[in-house]
Image (cartoon, rainbow, N blue to C red; front, side):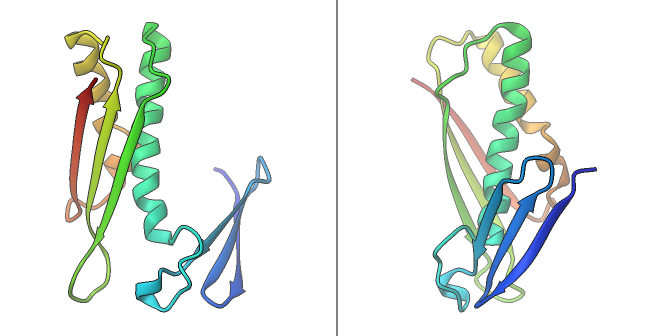
Length: 135
């Protein structure tokens, strides 16, 4: 269990504090939902969590197997539903991976990415489009 404390700061803004580290994170409602859009929205964090979780699990496999993975970048898009209820409809993840990875390493890392805890926790109603480019 990891304690996280969330405080509503008003004006559709929250501050979350990660208990073990004390790191602070601000969320703000997006402009299209009455907010200022000055920070990550909660649904932005969902998409970000998906990408960072996939990458972290790939990193665990890479560390275990001696695979160089530093510098991987992920472009993330979060798409909301057009009609109520408002929710995340689709997350697009485009991974820019090292070209030097062997086919076996690529398969192993991609399989690991898709089995991350966030991927296993998000509703199957959310469409996930993950692509891996090796260049």
